[in-house]
Amino acid sequence: MNFLSKTKGLTFFLSYTILASMLGMLQFGYNTGVINAPEGNIEKFIKDVFEDRYKENMDHGQAELLYSFAVSIFAIGGMLGGFSGGIIANRFGRKGGLLLNSFVGIGGACLMGLTKYFNSYEVLFVGRFIIGVNCGLNTSLVPMYISEIAPLNLRGGLGTVNQLAVTTGLLISQILGIEQILGTDEGWPLLLGLAICPAILQLILLPVCPESPRYLLITKQWEEEARKALRRLRATNQIEEDIEEMRAEERAQQSEATISMMELVCSPTLRQPLIISVVMQLSQQLSGINAVFYYSTSLFITAGLAENVAKFVTIGIGVIMVNMTLVTMPLMDKTGRRTLHLYGLGGMFIFSIFITISLLITEFFGFVQEMIDWMSYLAVVSILGFVVFFAVGPGSIPWMITAELFSQGPRPAAMSIAVLINWVANFAVGIGFQPLKTALDNYTFLPFSVLLAIFWIFTYKKVPETKNKTFEEILALFRQNGSMVEIEDSINFTSTSAILKSPDTSLNMDKHASYNTNNQ
Image 1: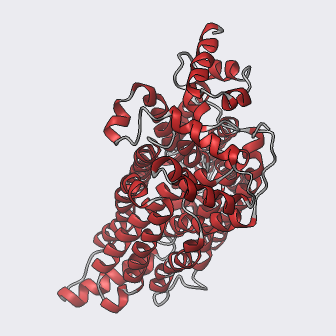
Image 2: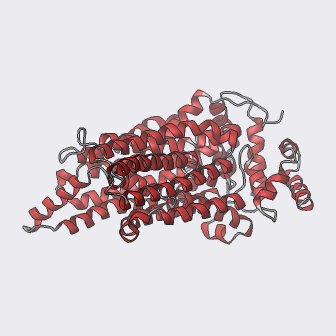
Image 3: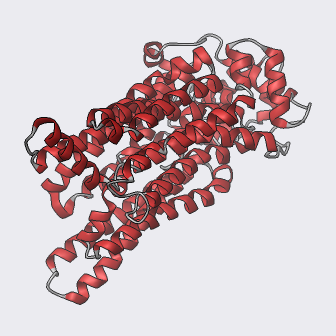
């Protein structure tokens, strides 16, 4: 039976395992958003500590600088954690790495929650750095684990749960951070300390989950353990097709084995998928979405909304992100990764232009009240539309496609590099947006518009469709010359079942590559 034609359901135990692992991405989303709401409270705390310690007042500029450091050190920790992800995944396994990382998260959350007890803003900085390391490791380990345990025909939809978890974490932090709940001078340490909850919950839920069958079979060569893990995840003894697919992947990447990051960068075969992975991560972070997440309230106020209205519309952004991610999940395996990413980037480009137009008209026709009212609605619709299209494509696909573009050997190193780039870009946008806004004023989103256009062209020209393709077939795409669009057209002529059923897969792949080359 062709394994692509076999319907594989989402079993209870697979759902449980994905839920337990996605808590790591919820942690990432929560800690990305949680620092924004209590900005004024944290700055006041920093000033009070400084005054108690040195018996003199701290000016507002210094307090803002230290608050910015508390925000940005999270991304620095994320870079370190993301870069270490491949090493941790190979040494301790995907599940083992997540379990160890939960202890890191508990440590960081405790320090943030006890900041006021120690009456020290340095404790806050250390806590934010440690929780950043935790989130960096999560962004590397969780997508890798989910992509390796998911059945082929569900891999896209299940990969979207990464973004669903991130957006849910963001929404929870936005709701808890309002002044009526924990966004107060007394409540903000508890708000930050609640990051301990996902880590503890993961420590409780994850131990009964199996290690990644691919890791067990291909990396550790423990076939019996891999079979046990697959039987539990698939709730059936009919696992030979999964085993055969893993064996095919193992044969395809045996010459590479487990490779280092330097070897990955220098490999001619793997250079193109690595470039694609890096650009896909940049398309997520440099799209301008973090500018919306970090500064949406001020953007709405600039566009003419009242401050109390702007804060609740910002929470609306989180609600829309969660709902749109849910809508995207079934589309991922139906429409395809590449197509959705093109739709997402294209929609974001259009709405980024509308955001600029609404800001310009508000400035130039500010003396006409009716025009201000109308433009404030346009600004809200444009920003919400921008967020909707981010959820359609760039929100989830870069995390997923990096894990899909590489076989078992180079995958950990590739995830480390891609996640490092993602965090560096995240840090750059977080630090650079305010100076950019000061320099360009109402034209702030134009650089993002240009970048979105560049990313759309790159995706159209270079990114392959990975929907319903095995890791081995995806690797075969990059062994051929020519644009990815041409390769996509030609590879569909060959039956994937014929490839997998061949006793000599590597020989069959060579014939397949030869066939495609002759037909281009």
